[in-house]
Picture 1 (tube, rainbow, N blue to C red):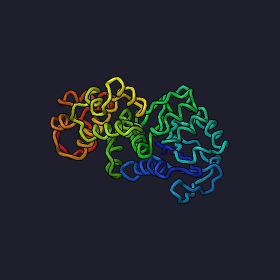
Picture 2: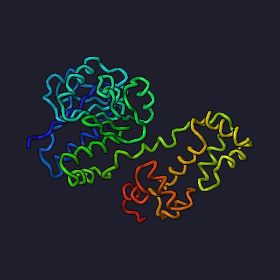
Picture 3: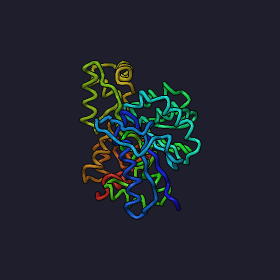
Picture 4: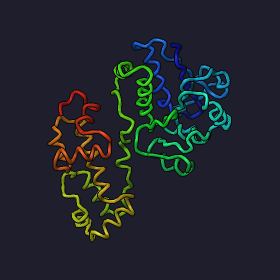
Amino acid sequence: MPPRTVLITLFEGTLSLDFTGPLEVFAGANQTGSPGAYRVLTATLDGGPVRTSAGFTVIPDLALRDVPAPHTLIVPGGSGTRRLDPALIAWLRETAPSVERVVSICTGAFALAEAGLLEGVRATTHWTMCASLARRFPGVEVDPEPIFIRSGKVSTSAGVTTGIDLALALVEEDLGRDAALRIARHLVVYLRRPGNQTQFSAQLAAQTAQRLPLRDVQSWIAEHPAADLSVAALAERANLSPRHFARAFRNEVGMTPGRYVDGVRLESARRLLEDSGDGVAEISRACGYGTPEAMRRAFVRALGTSPAEYRRRFRPTAVS
């Protein structure tokens, strides 16, 4: 079978890890048991060098006008997506229908959306930019939770390193799980976070309250996840009535107290599963879930996986 051509478009202000991560995955396939599986190319609009957001210069393989029809087209993100050349958007719009897969990494989703390639498509981007993507392109079904989404021939990923997860998923589709596993081992990454896994930072993407009593409550929650964190208990700590507390907390933090507590407990449990050798039952008590079953339900609901499976993926030498 001829090699699949993977084309990575580059532009001024490209985030370097957005393209080097996936590039190393596809190149790794050629180096770890599947020689000739992929032909990886980089290209800029005119074939000239570009400076990345990190400040170093990249010399591409060729100009976009000289690129043979790729199998997989990848658009990375970076600050440059705020001011893309209209000619690049036009090239994406014209080229995308003839390729097998169109992929964006991080804020590369904005380029796809501007080219009309995400209209009516469920997509994601870096969690801090999801609201902006939804505002600018109301025809896109923006989902801020998953680390990547595959919608037919179009795939979008969340921030930075999730491009590696998505690239591994594409290699697994092409060459099988064993090939993807070899690459993951070669790159010393886990194979592989499922696409429906939540962008973890989004769990605590809350504002800091303006009023000191509410900020103190936020700190108390983070430091005491196993405590009684009911609205009544937290309101008493803030010296407010439960109704006043719930309304003020939501107005200043941007979410209800219950949702905030859920996020803190999940984050605490996740870190203990990653960093400690404590058992699931002990962690469930330490994080306020009470029982392993309650914690399992919370993990499945938020992350799409159980605590035991989460630990196997992110701390595979641990025993649950």
